[in-house]
Image (cartoon, rainbow, N blue to C red):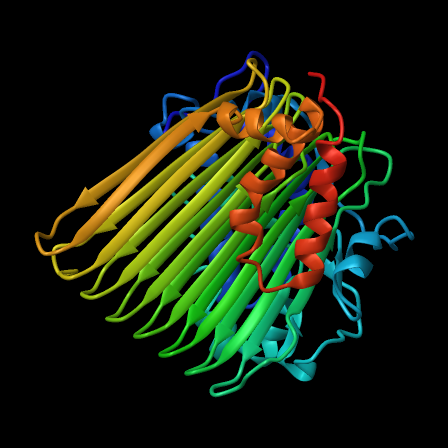
Length: 439
């Protein structure tokens, strides 16, 4: 257990005070199993508080700005044109969630298989009661605990056994502040049946210049032979604090492809936990983070090979400018019974400014002897030989740098199966690096 964060005049109870009336209301109206889950989450948060940098998991991220802020529960809101611009750019029929509440009726190719969680925990308790909160643990994860205690609604996505979804399911979470700093809690549960095929895109956005807190928890279960391509796009406002968690359980011969894209926010952390729970399970984790100015982005991944003949690959790339800071902590666990498993992890970072900072910490915990594992991390600047070549072909130096920067990101972008998203990201990167960033 990590020590609670201690600031003069501030305790976790003071920080939680604005949320306690909502917490009491939520615990009173849910089913018994959900009330118990919320109670455990709140007790965990009260017991552990906010971890300090003495905690190994939070060594490179300072939570004092979050602990010093005072947030309030988000009220229901109607989106404006600016709030749904991202949704319109990504899909013809996106599912829009405003301040943690789905906008009804729910569109999309799944029809009745998209279910608000407030309905699911009553009408589909055999699913929600078994899976919700089972995979996203609270240990040294204060924002998972906060989310579990306070989320008001969310989405259950059911992908039937044997189904093939031709179009991706696009879910866009919008934060709409209302005159004071708010806290928005997003919750998603994805259940993919045997031998199903699907793609899901979840995106988060909010207005610039307004402080708010966004927590997001997505739990995924892939049954035998299922394939899920899951993409997470974080494009929060410039003053936002965003903490997301993706926790997945992979059954026999299932395959998870995760793409994590981080562009926005003042301070963000993106956690991924995958358990390869049976033979043949496979995961591919791809990430791209592009902080500029004084942004701070933290990536924390854990892949647990629990059974034999499981495989994982990770490719995370960062582009930093200004005084930006980035963290990559990637942990691979090979259990004693996970013989003949294969795990590869790569982290590459491109610094466009001498003031930018990257902390990379790959970790291997190998408890079996017949396995193949490799990891590596690198931090560097624009390739001078490539820059010289482009300049010799007549390109101005800034244009040459921009081309090399965009090419660095392309290795991740080309893995995206969503063409509208890929083009949206290329345009955002062109805008971001079209001129020098000051920080």
